[in-house]
Image (tube, rainbow, N blue to C red; front, side, top):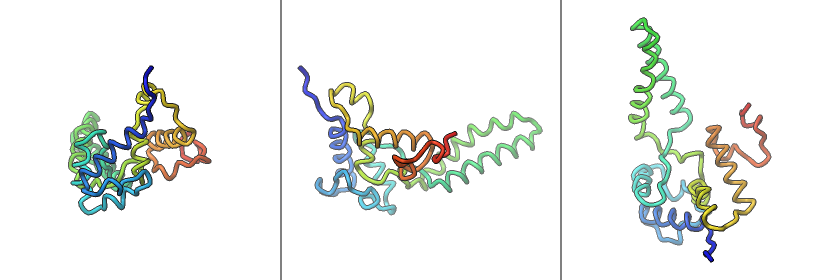
Amino acid sequence: MTQNYNPIVRTFGQVRAALVKAVGVPRSAVRPGTELETLLPVDGRRALWNRARQQEPQLPALQLSPEEATWGCLGVLVAAAALAVALRDPAGLLAIIPLGFLVYGASRPWAVHFPLGLQTAGELTLHLTRLGDHRDSGYRPTRNEILIKVRLVLAYALNRPLADVRPESTLQDLGAE
C-alpha cells in the first residue's frame, strides 16, 4: 500500500527551498503567509526571482503591470497597422506576431510584478501544485484548497488579479460573459 502524502506540502517545501537559496534568508522566514513583496522587494527582484527559477519547482515568469502590458500591446497593434498601411497590403498585419515577440523580449527588464497578483508564498505554492500531483498522492484537498485553486484558475483565465476573484464574485462581476 502506498503512503498518502500532501502534494501541497511537498510543493511548498520546494518553493521554500528555492526562495531560501535565492534570497539568502533563514528557512523559518518563509512560511505560507509570508508576503512575497516583503521577501522579494522590487529593487533586485528580477535577479532574485531568476535565481529562484533555476530551482524546482519552475516558478512562473514575472509580469509587467497591467498598464505597461496594455501600452505594449497597443504599440504592437499600431506598428503593425502602420506597416499594413505603408505597404498597402493587409498582410502587413501579420507583423503582429514577430513584433509581439520582440516587444515581449524587450520588456522583460521591466517585468517585476508577480503573476496573477499572487501575494504570499502559500498562494504561489497552490498555483504551482498540479492536479496530477493530487491524483497520484492519494491526498484529498480541503474545501479551502479547492476554493483557492478555482480562484487561481479563474484569475488566470480572466487575466485578473487574484484579489479581484473573491468567493462571492459572480462570473458577470468578473467580466466573463
